Image (cartoon, rainbow, N blue to C red):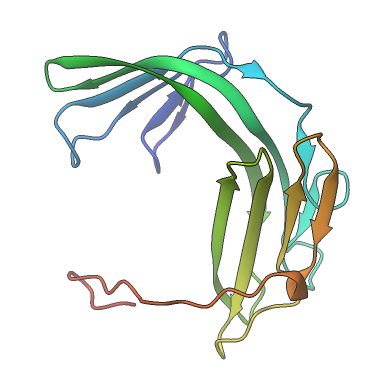
Length: 171
């Protein structure tokens, strides 16, 4: 089994796509189990055959793919109550040694399964001066599996409000 300390998620490599998550801070205990899902389409490779550039330097990249529509079912346990759940899930895999350039301070990322059967993923790399980095990118997948790559200028993200950490005051 692979263990991710950051997300407290264990992936059982003998049974791909089987996850057990424990989040004691939200609800104690919070567990979910997702049965091996049915894959609707082949993996979506982001960037150039899976190599997703995040900055100008050669090391500012990641390998990144998505399975955008998985038919999933499983059980959610909240305390002593167990609920059966089913629906459509999205699985991302991304790994790198370095993702941010020297003038980048973070990113905004989202992945949406739209009600018309299309899927949309976009990430905006933020520069230290508040502007959007030209390496920001995304993808739109139509209901038939057609892929349209989106460059930085294709999507405009406009914040309508900000979260401020009550602990650190960071926005």
